[in-house]
Image 1 (spheres, helix red, strand yellow):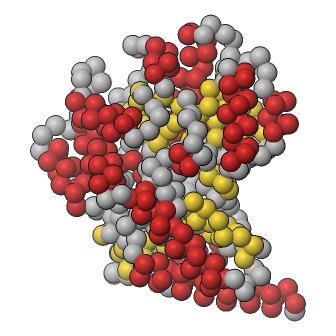
Image 2 (cartoon, rainbow, N blue to C red):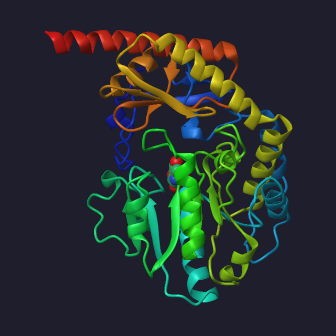
Image 3 (cartoon, rainbow, N blue to C red):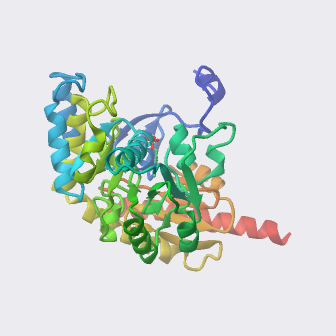
Amino acid sequence: MSKLTQTEKLSKVFPSYGRFDISLVKGKGSWVWDDEGNKYLDFTCGLAVTSLGHAPEKVGAKLKEQIDTLWHVSNLFHIPGQDKVAQLLTENSCADQVFFCNSGAEANEAAIKLARRYQQKIKGVDRYEVITFEQSFHGRTLATLTATGQQKVKEGFLPLPAGFKTVPLHDLPALEAAIGDHTAAVMLEMVLAEGGVLEVQADFLQAVVELCKQHGLLLIVDEVQTGMGRTGKLFAHQHYGIEPDIFTLAKGVASGFPAGVMLGKDYLREAFSPGSHASTFGGTPLAAAVMSATIETMLEDKLPERAAEMGSYLKGQLTEKLADCSFVLDIRGKGLLIGIECKSAVGDIVLAGQKRGLLFVTAGPNVLRLLPNLYVSKEEIHQAVDIVSELIHTYAEQTDGEANS
Ligand SMILES: *Cc1c(COP(=O)(O)O)cnc(C)c1O
């Protein structure tokens, strides 16, 4: 059978994604297979989603059990599975309350709505503005793309909703100047993952916390990509010893089942009074079963600790193999969220990696991003590091040659 081109395969789907020419049809653990039987080592994990590896058995068993029991009921009824997830998440974080939804963007929408409603209804002040940072990424809904500090997600979508300001990261005077009578909250990621795997500096974060206290602003941490063990703690803000008023989860929270969670402190509770916010599919019995199985597995198998250990091993191996390569400017990240910043665009390295049987992605034009699952073995790390470092060396020589010719 002749292979259909990507355009032929996808002609009935809006072409909003720039897709690779690979169709993945099967996955197990760290490995995925395409429709031609080629096998790949997956250092993408659905972009930090399948943190337990593909088709994790314990979670799969709970999902199958729930499929035979009850799929969906309205949130007009109590859903016992939600209590269990809420218990697990609040016991292991600074949060006291949770709201269930279906995606990262929706969790951030819920966070923005909760911040506005708390300031306006509970504190009785005219505050609605959310300050965010350049290079951040918060989602693709109108509010969350407005919050996102990257021009490319906003093009063609004017007018954008009011009530957002963006300032440069690590620029305290700019942040202070942006705070006004209408500011309700500051929102940021602990590692700006889409923006180039940029870690927030601890002293800057402490200053943000202080400013929020001083001005009565809520601190919202977007943990959609950094949460659920990825960075070496269950939640990345725990590295810094801070307690956000609100934080959000999605990607890694349900092993690939669509789910999002917005978590907040108890004093925010009354702001989401009955009827104030809702989601048909938020925290269904199916989603709740998958979330609790995912979280329990992560805690039982100490996956945040494992991510920390394997992350520093991966970073060490990369540093060793790429130490003499002037094409590489920086190797950074926390846990198993690793960025390799290079001198020029690295898209071709990703494509070359696919030919060698390794899947990884970029984070902005010049940064390679490695996101293995949290069970990744040292042997798999060696395989990936060998391929990545070889490709970078080859590519660096080529571009050097071109620059000198
Ligand atoms: C992926 C991501 C989002 C958006 O999540 P969706 O589930 O795609 O809506 C928001 N914030 C961050 C930090 C992300 O990485």
